[in-house]
Image (cartoon, rainbow, N blue to C red; front, top):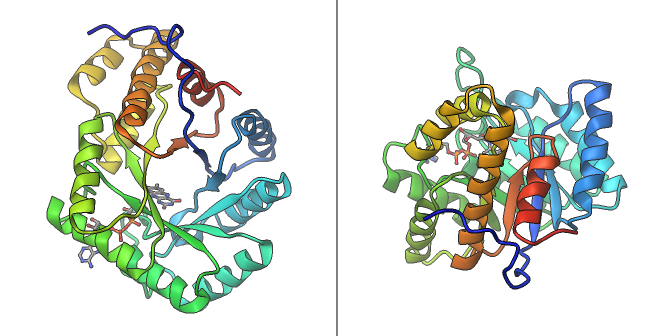
Length: 289
Ligand SMILES: Cc1cc2nc3c(=O)[nH]c(=O)nc-3n(C[C@H](O)[C@H](O)[C@H](O)COP(=O)(O)OP(=O)(O)OC[C@H]3O[C@@H](n4cnc5c(N)ncnc54)[C@H](O)[C@@H]3O)c2cc1C
């Protein structure tokens, strides 16, 4: 079925939104991100989150960006990865975040670059969630990651589902998914989670498509499946970025529409520190500011 233009439809129901950024590496990147954030704030996000390099490699950039977002009057979630960390450092960073006024964390295991081994006092994100709850009670709303298409290191889909359940039992309040392009994978995962008696919100993570090579590289690394029909079309556009972006907009807007119509309660956008693609999708959905 061809993509139907959405312009003539009834005004669309708007879902709560959140936007994810990574900490910029340069002053120019930081200035650009400030602009991007202002453009996205027009969509009144529930919160904006900032990623955190595993091993604490982006501590200053992450905490600094979170501080800026809070200073702009927007709720900020700080990603927090535990791989390689000690309880002493996590404890002091939690105190730092609390003092900054952070109320929401995305608690993760993270991935160290190959060759670093595992180390540290936390093996899995569930250990981190349990530690945060034990140390800080209900001071933070804790988000965790989940994987409708199964985490690449999971022993099996069932083991990954149980690993997710362990994070909820340890005290997670809600979850954000790895990005995906097959809504069926999301619905199945949600059904499997609900069958375990878990009613935690599971927010679809949405990756706007702006570049073919970058998307394929990310997807190979994180185990997100690019359906063959999408991969082939993206490949066929070569360096024609206008066609990639236009096709990407169709695909991602249609995905969001299906998720909304199927009952998703909110959407989390992996903005890649850009506003145009995310705003384009929201505009296509009829959710302009
Ligand atoms: C929304 C979102 C945000 C992210 N943000 C960041 C970020 O800011 N920084 C960053 O470095 N990375 C980030 N990531 C990537 C994430 O760190 C990686 O996907 C990482 O490999 C797994 O992290 P996790 O928290 O899901 O780990 P876990 O939940 O610990 O799972 C990791 C693996 O271990 C398995 N597992 C879990 N518990 C057990 C157990 N008890 N026994 C055996 N196996 C188990 C799981 O099945 C899975 O395969 C993000 C991912 C998502 C989806």
